[in-house]
Length: 368
Image (tube, rainbow, N blue to C red; front, side):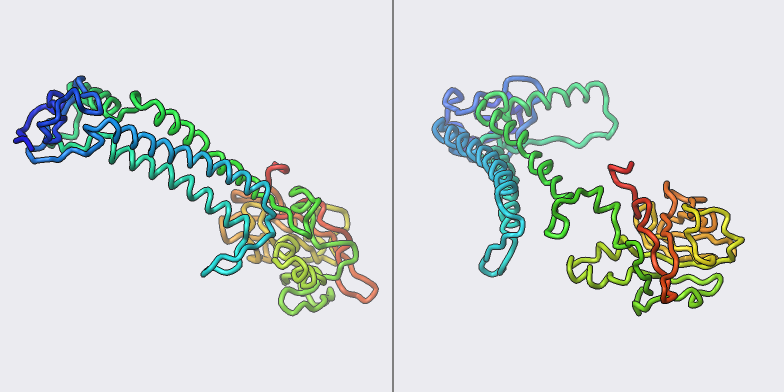
């Protein structure tokens, strides 16, 4: 190894690798001759084989390119797995048990795609980019015009030393791999809507616009699931309620989606205090039924002030006037609380006279 002293690495025949017996003409990489070279550290440094062996350099180049190509292949396999594999299929994985076949395939291919890009970049840096130690003195944080010029020179130096222009195969495969990399992220947007056995054939608009409420559906309390008579609700009172068949729907669908959409509150006020409703005669003797789900971001609401008839959302303070058709009077909510028309059946229990006339909960794309 040669004795290194602090000097401009751009003018150092071996780029500061301390391998003085290797002529500059025999190095696998052409030396950087432009401005911006940093002084090499005054320490011995052994060169890598790819620094002076053209065959080793080409082998490293092929390794990096192969990793980028493999990343591209993983992206293609990701899309194939997403389209071809049944989302309901399972596969047994030792130590993990039964897992979703499609989920496993998507995770494996996408993970390998990301890994190959990272591994290729690391291999490129370790085998082909200069690894000489350099010295950069500390300086004030304020940049001078001269320092700006030096920064531009350093950029040119880095671009040249990285070999981005020299290694055409690496450059092209890297660009291609990075171009394909976002495709899985776009493809996975399809999972925003994945039909199940119970929702097959229905669009998201139909599902979000439909609840478990039907004409004549009895109203039951949330918790005891007991039917409600008008006399059970005093003036100023509030009751959280659900459709009578909610438990059967939950058992069939194996989720709480129907409960979340169908939850309502019943409030009672003097009939002459009701200034407006969303439909003629949608109350029963001053009892009003509104969705319990805030139209802002979907928080459940049960904070009712019976003197003002205001309903307050605890999440972002949206406030609705239930005596005035559930209209918004304060906060970020952009839509009123949907009202459910109610009446009584032959047995004297409160029932829904019709489903909601508008979608409940937050707005969605198709609604605006």
